[in-house]
Figure (tube, rainbow, N blue to C red):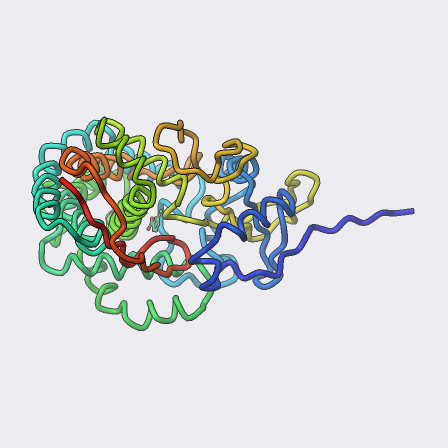
Length: 398
Ligand code: OVP
């Protein structure tokens, strides 16, 4: 007798508004159902357990990125833009581009920017605390990154707000062709033009990360056709990610006043609070990989050429890894090992920038504010890949 086992199936649409705004019940079901499940709605596999997500992220030979980090399989369908040289390539090509970017955004280079990034964090925190009530997203999380990051790239003041619409499009485009992507595509043409124009050497200041990428082309490390695409990665992934990360961190702290009290008592916990918030409510919820060959996930076979949806935000709340308190926000836990920045060869190259921005903003607020509370209902922001908030009204006590 032959016993045929079949991979478990979930009929949910993880890109439906209800799951995007409240994904955690779906995550629990995903993790409980098995190490890998089928989502017939999209003809893809999905993983939500920490060990399996992490194993896939660190096996870049089996779970490749060159066929796209979104639902679109580049082997079958035309990508919405020329693929990213960083996100959507595999070694050995990826290694060349990643090595250039590792040098451009080396932790030491980023640390040197503290003096440039700090005054704006202090100024903004001082102004908002004086107001007493403000919106953690529209007055802070969307404001601070746009003041400091484009300067460090070497972009002009004029037009930098296009980076928000462009990021929203780039992250929606990892998902299906639903109404979110359609809406982003319908409005993003000016942002797409602005971004394309500002990847050129002439559009970038003589000093900054943009110029540093072009200098790598002058040295022959990359070609002059590749340089603008690497600049485009900075402009795609450098703003919305930190906007959502800061917004989610302030949301988490506003929902947990005792955690804010701990941060106020010791503002050096700012970096830990940021990591814990990224774990507890991960801005980048999902990425796809494509299997390069037949493989096994636990006891389940996954055929080569399959799209696999990795739930980073679910792995970061898996009690198999984090224990019974997995879903508790606690800035004193060690959130190290979370996969909110990915893991493996593609792990976020911009991490030191995100961490610097978060440390400066949270530190500046933590030193000034003894109590921080929600001042109205937060409003979710919808995106096929990013989880976060359009508005988080808060009230602060100096
Ligand atoms: C979070 C990311 C996201 C979107 C775009 C790119 C990278 C890129 O390289 O263009 S990583």
